[in-house]
Length: 107
Length: 120
Image (cartoon, rainbow over all chains, first blue to last red; front, top):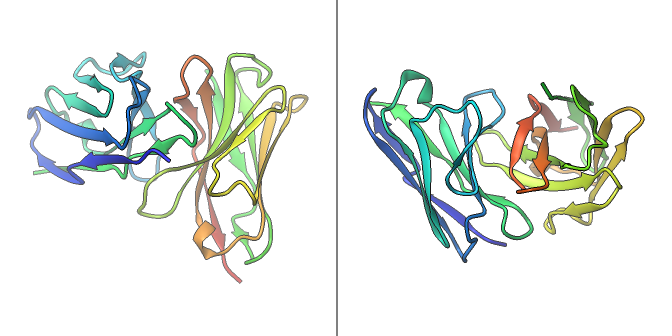
């Protein structure tokens, strides 16, 4: 299985901050990576697919980059609605696997 | 707007079979553009992909669960289902059904999730 490792596990930030989350794959996954946002008690919500493509309806403050084994999710100006847990997911090879999550907390 | 809704028992006894159904509305499960997946999340932990099915009935499973998992589809009811046999407490989790696009296997629509507890 391809292991996905996110860092940091927890991130404390303030409204307006620029936030970056990193996801590393244990082997190359080209650009076959998605990012999700999950709030407590809710299902994950797709933010980014194919490493850098913004899902329809997702605010433009979210962006993704990277290829191969290293990827980043950036929130350009953190908003109150963005405090949540973020997961990356690879879909290069079976089984699809997720990172362990990064919780973005209020500083 | 596509909606997915999980249903099934919230409590299952150890060694028994967990059975869940996902009902799809707002779109046809027979559309050739999607796979239909199951994903689970133990409390306070990360996400684990269980497996998926295509409208034709073709399936792919996570090898870690493959010996215990069966996913099936009922196109007449616009539903797909999950069966997980010989459950233990480690199978206690929120179970999600999700739509997976063919053009890239990410999950664009999710059900709200249903908690299944394995306990005697």
